[in-house]
Image (cartoon, rainbow, N blue to C red; front, side, top):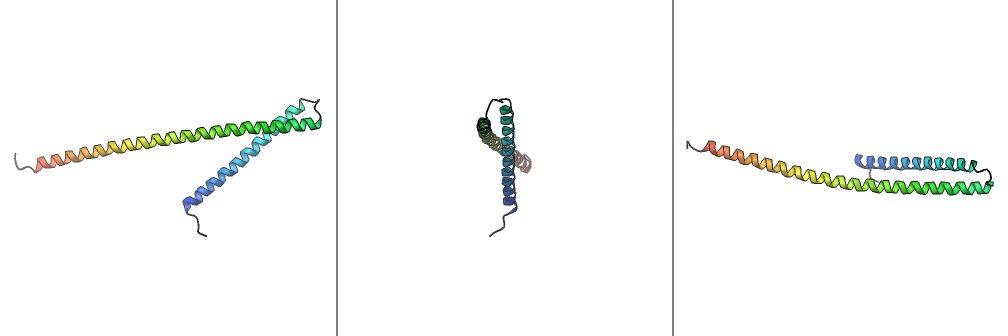
Length: 123
């Protein structure tokens, strides 16, 4: 088995950190949803224990589904923005390269003209 290079190790470490962060965010969101469901059920004292548990479970699942949708839309938007900015950056980079090439050609032409004028025998 080969040893991963520095760049590969960094990508693997980043992927692991992202996965751990996602897990912790999901756990925190589930816990917040559970607390909110418990608080709501506590304000409904006429519910039986089974009804309160069922309502709490349904509220947690609904909240997590809403959160998943928000995260998916945010991730999709971030990806679209990333592609748009990448395309704009590539366009600007090409434009800058063309302008630098045009300036370099102009300078070379001026230098060649100046050299030709200076090299011409006493006109």
